[in-house]
Picture (cartoon, rainbow, N blue to C red):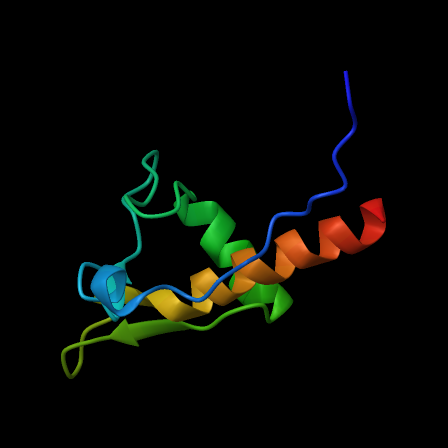
Length: 91
């Protein structure tokens, strides 16, 4: 079997696929994963704690609970960065 030196190249999303993706999506419910990347709620909390991305909380005035949103592009950039890091280590 012949070894290939081709590497995967991370490309930005095309305009056609961007139209199908939201700017933000909700943090998944406990025990579930998000529909775009398959990451869990706890994984997003860990990424926020590490400073890898920001979660946006929308609360009604005087309320303690609300909706937590994640910027799709931030997660996309994080995934691309992780891929690039792994490829650099493999080289």
